[in-house]
Image (cartoon, rainbow, N blue to C red; front, side, top):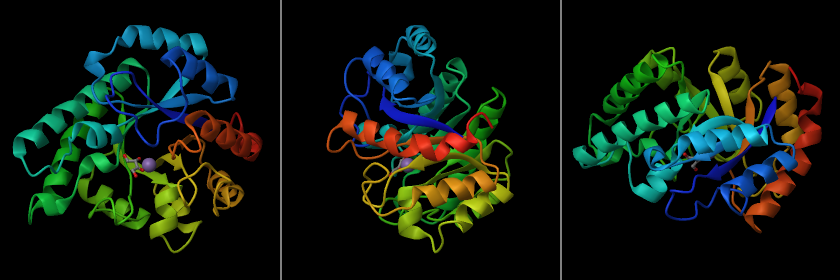
Length: 277
Ligand code: LER
Ligand code: MN
């Protein structure tokens, strides 16, 4: 199991509440590495506005992988969602998802996340579920042709009206029926929506679809800042054979550096038995 910290890329126009670390991009990468992270998750809105080759050099220089390209900032900072009520904005969102996939390819990131970026079925009326399935199928085709995958994230009921739990996520992935679409489980959302701590992770693993994990405590603080038993979750994941990333995507409180430091302090010893596996 590997550890990652979510950071925002420089073109994102506003601070993302769940992006960690302060300073220039180079500073943040150096801090992530210094804290023992294996990778970073890049929260980005417009990769075409970035100097991607310079970013890749900076990542290589810091010895960091890109664990994932996160799409959440597209909804939060750019108002783009796949289920936007305005079909033109939804089409723009679909196009931007392709940009994120291209960005993932260039930075050798294994996947692009789809969380808040999907939007809400209620925005588009009756056929929202089918529409989302069709848009994700199309994006998964585009991703698969380039060796990248998409990870759909069950979100709590206050943030979306489609796919709240791992079971619902697996059913939806089945409906879409594409080998490049899997799941991302976020402990903060699991805490709100699930009935068990172990079952959702085990089921997603048994289906071969658990491709990424977000870390956040029940109050969305760093692990140890709330009530969640992260040791038990890591043990469950370890037993189930999960060897992917645990990526901290949590509130930058009390400040973006302390949240990262505390996350790594808590998580490093927990994943140590599973390092290199
Ligand atoms: C939103 O709450 C979340 O967890 C992000 O990963 C959404 O993209
Ligand atoms: Mn998340």
